[in-house]
Image (cartoon, rainbow, N blue to C red; front, side):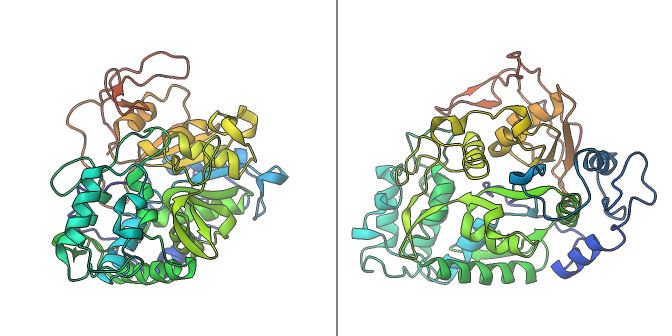
Length: 432
């Protein structure tokens, strides 16, 4: 789950339907790499017709052959190697939480909060944001009833602004949170879904998914008064990678900062069972989504102080996959107990990527902290690939690794360090 403030204006040539994506990913790749150099799996290697940057496909094939073992349906509890994927802009192009909330806004599915008090939707919301929302969305609608956001453009615009972390007037929407464990904007995507049943949200997500897959690649739509993304695409290369890892005995799971019920809908097409999908988890009360979040580590349920972002992703993996509880869930496990592979695209992924012991795949979206780690590649386990659709241009200046690329818990900036404590030098963006 990442900000889409700088929305893409791209028009690509990957206008494949999901059916064609999956067909491409399963054809011609079931046997060991016919023309690939180096070591490959004896049961399945990556599809040689799908384009990767440089030698990345060959390096992935060699890693899979070393770390995997023929046979699908691996389970980490039975000793299978664990592979973890972020979802938004890693497995798919664009963001599925945005796609779902855009659909909800257009279709009047956002509910008036309890007592018409917007602070009830987030304990981190500022008074300025709550006031702006109350003014824009009015008090005529009863609590728990749908707001007319499809036609009330002021209300829709204010909700869109707060989702980006500030009011339409430019004031901070959230404050006083740990930037390494939480992002109240990400949490708010889930919290404004509050009041609906899990089945309702599943239905909303399916409708939004159908619209986004049917839309022309790169299409935009009007929500409120803004032009926003209207299409999401599965990356064929990532679908193929997931299937190949499974065929080689890996336990493959998703760790996302999007709403878990939303990710489950999108991930089921790729064969993910619900217990293999992790995301922002709302507290459910008798089947109804509340405005509170399931905690992790030393964060109790209902305090809403943790979402799976940065160190929060490590916590959720350690707690959900490995059964670690309490404050220890925020600490790295011994190397022999951690994931062997991880894939992600931005700073929210930097901790769980760094925890991977075998190989780390980074989709380059120009995030300074993550790209400092990836380009430094101090242990030789980082792979960088440009975005598969409309890759971002080269950063014009080196990433400021030695000064301001790291985000501290209080939101201030600092240098990025290696595991041994040394400071990473500024890095030139060379894979784009």
